[in-house]
Amino acid sequence: MATVWYDHYARCPFYQRTDDNKQVYCEGICGAKSTIMKYDTKEEMMVQLKTVCCDNYKSCVFYQFKEEMYDKNG
Image (cartoon, rainbow, N blue to C red; front, side, top):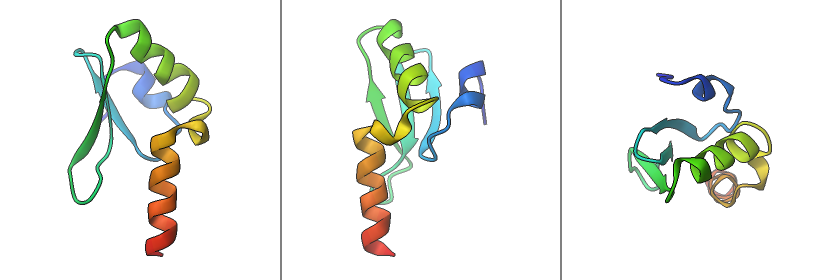
């Protein structure tokens, strides 16, 4: 469920949400509920969200990994 405005604009299919602790949650790996990317500052997190999750998500290493994983597993 989207909790903040940018959750509605994230285009990455693996994006789940963010929180107030400077963390971005993405679809989990190997059955895990979520994979969490932690940032030192909220500004760093917002750069990731705006430039990658909401725009150029195919440049994300995590996106590329998940796509490769799905391609191999059919």
